[in-house]
Image (cartoon, rainbow, N blue to C red; front, side):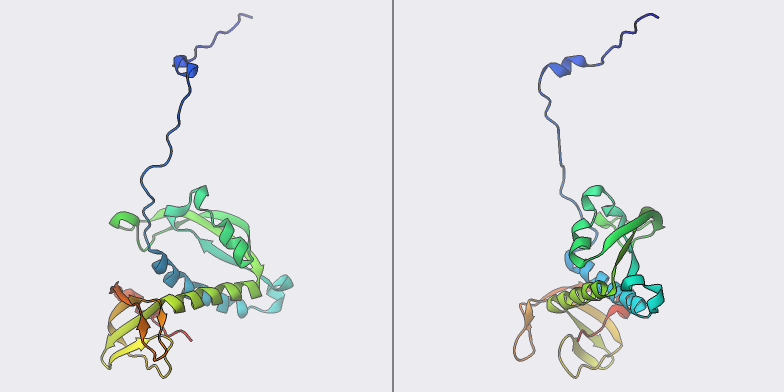
Length: 205
């Protein structure tokens, strides 16, 4: 059998060191960190409520499985939430491809249906409750909502005797904390909320 000779294209480049090009422009995120947290906290709360309503027979060793759907812009391996899962005490037990339409995309691009990854995580129900509690407490520390409705302005936050008014305009205010007399410390206006966010406005205990 005749010996085969292989031609190596552009082999001259192998006689000197080649410097790889990495990186590029900084990652553009569809949501700010605080927007992400304000979206995730109520989602976790609803999921944990459903898990707590399950009978013991449906949760062997008091463990339950949740579905975590990644934003399509974070399906690269470098964005896999391994550290998050470890910190909250859950482990990934499977995944699948899923088609969704995200509410927002980065760079102001219009939302469209696209493929993403759905991860199934398992953990003790106590760990899931703790995860939800942490998310809600962090949200409580950093966010307040002013509602302008038919009954006037009231602060939706940690103040007692808060009366909810159906809002016509909802502004999101970020702040560092509460003063002893119940005022916001270092507050600044972040913008008006979308109308469809009305259902997510609530007072945190």
